[in-house]
Length: 123
Figure 1 (tube, one colour):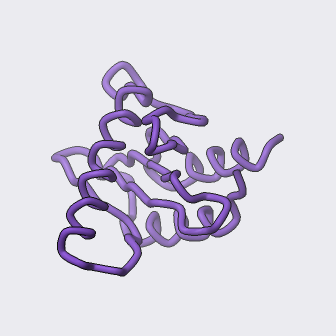
Figure 2 (cartoon, one colour; figure 1 turned 90 degrees about the vertical axis):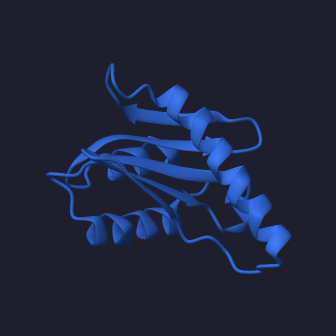
């Protein structure tokens, strides 16, 4: 099993996980995804979240902010969506994405687990 597949399985082991993906934000394509549903098409979510990441990077550049993004959190009434750009040399241009059921997820623990998964992911 590849490192990417293991990372996706690890993301789905987070309490409340509904879907997860590793995405190239230059192309908007998911390198891999797992989970999802009729209501959560991970290909569509990957492409849409690419726009979110690009917009945030552009805004930070315009503001002169030189820091790295840890994660981007989008909350909706029933879910948390966490986007975490990869910071390692081998992960530049990629982000991990996890959709979580709000009723079952622990947001702080999920963010912690995603940080660990990011550190161990080599693509």
